[in-house]
Length: 185
Image (cartoon, rainbow, N blue to C red; front, side):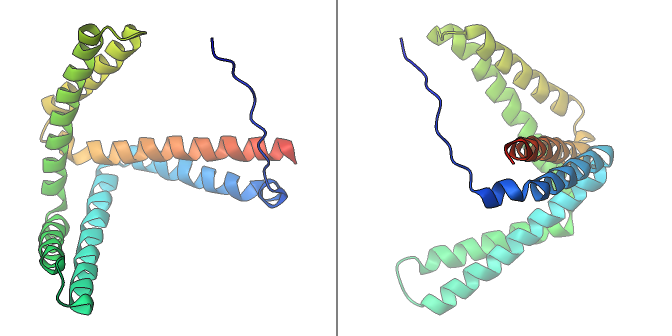
């Protein structure tokens, strides 16, 4: 049997003293998450535009890298990456809703396949606590079915909803950290 002992963690006084800024960050992320969930379609479009522009910027960086470094073994990889990033990024910026629909279709298919594997694996491998693994697989499978059953309409809101949920949990964790830091001060 393994013995678990407490870790001696030392948190710098400066971090404890500035707990309020962690609270502000958490509240801000939580509010943005709620806004993204409430306005999931707008959050989806904004997320796709942001992602598209990131790819366009990455294409520019790849071009600069290829020009500045000159001839070397990786030169053609940089040019290929620049073209791919640029074309995909421009397509996403030009057609964010259609891009969201395609990405949502891929996400739904991924959840469906991953859910099936996660549902079957605990029985095939005889995992301990197999029930939790099977439940995880069932939920993932159902999520994939829900996303695909409502596609292409789900392409309008799924990404924004997922971004919102991620922001809500991220904000909640920063708020919890801030309150823990406050109790140390």
